[in-house]
Length: 71
Image (cartoon, rainbow, N blue to C red):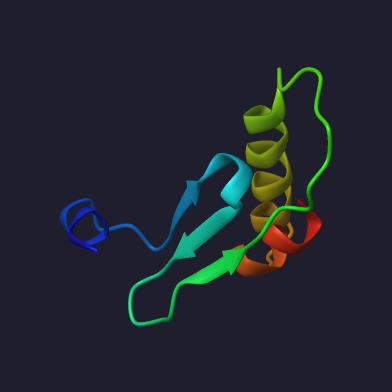
């Protein structure tokens, strides 16, 4: 969690390809969201979609973990 402290982040989302995503927040246990296995033909825009959903969730005043449920 050094990077979180160094940059004074309130949260850090690590995308892990087929292993899902992990949300790291100071003082909280890591929140891991696994993926559901699917055959994917084109991953173009997948990261943009995640960022968009999380940004909309935060803009609506929700906690970061809530956005993971929508991704």
